[in-house]
Image (cartoon, helix red, strand yellow):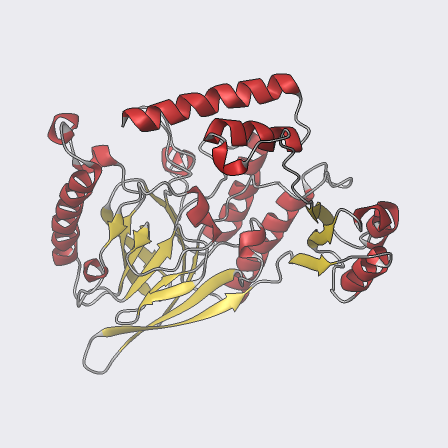
Length: 409
């Protein structure tokens, strides 16, 4: 039996909702991410696993700071002194220009022992203490990997993606045929697989992802699919198991309810000679995100808010407070007392007042709404918001241009 840890989407450098740690001089949120990574490293060494597969996105961006690179390297070194480490290049690790180095290339350049880096699709053999392991790597797919510029001229994005998928399918099939039959094979990919449930990262995807079809993984020689890119932990395919480990820490409030952690994978050979896999998700004690949402009206609005805060466990959590109220009740909100009630939070991300305000459309005597043009109505609306006259003029000018463009179409 072989035992492998699978994790992804570390995103070192995501330091929102934090402060400078006085002891280390580093961001307190960076310390959260490193604490999660340390837990994985400690677990891998204590459990004497055979290999660790990282499915991409080590850093927040393509040009990590030296500090972030140092902290990542320290932990990779601890692992690689005892365990083979496989690093897949994700979309956050890929440089903009073809000639530039990617964020993980230094390990390959220095030929760091026991560390394998995959920037291009390929088949790798990892020698572990309990036997060899094959890894078929599908790092973040860059168009130039499969298509020349002249091949894409005049094609739509869906046509380009279809052509890329055809080339990718051919390559994967060829690599799988080359793989040794009696060795377990993990297909590691940093990509979106059709059928996956998106997390909060969907908000920053612009529809340019190449969506991999499930049949790409359904091959007799694929024992397990180790996925990265989507932050929500989930199994996408059951036979063979194809799993997103999810990100290692919560990045924003869109991930407030998601568990974070890594996958503990066991590969064993059946009596019939086939390799099978079983996996368990190992959750991490990561930073909690807590939303306190309350409807507070009338003279007791502040007390209502304080009661809502007290009903939530905000200690050491990143907290956002959303207060729904109205214009008449807003003066009764004592912000100083409310902020004092939030002092046990690790970080107060937002204190938002959602105030209902009556819309007063002030018309001249004799004016009727149905007799006004859209521009006139818009001008009245901006004035009801007490916008400065010069700003109203600018907004009306742009609105008029948009209307003209609409009519022209």
